[in-house]
Image (cartoon, rainbow, N blue to C red; front, side):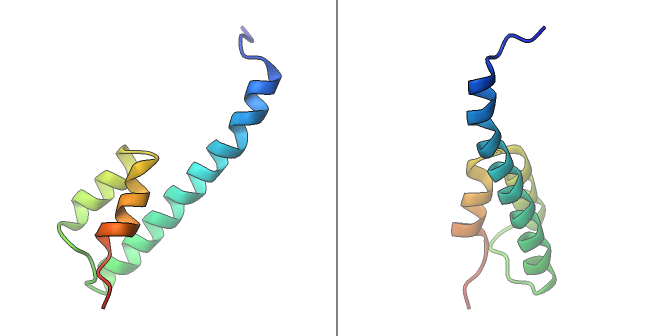
Length: 69
């Protein structure tokens, strides 16, 4: 049942938590930018990118998705 050594789990846990926080912050930023009409492109496509492309999606959103006025 327990195939993963404890060391590997302890190494991966901070990365999983960081990924979760990055996704939550990106979704909150998407929601706020959507209310302010400051998104580049389709808003639902950006949400899909953030949620489905797990690690790179939020980073792509922060680089290309928000309009910098």
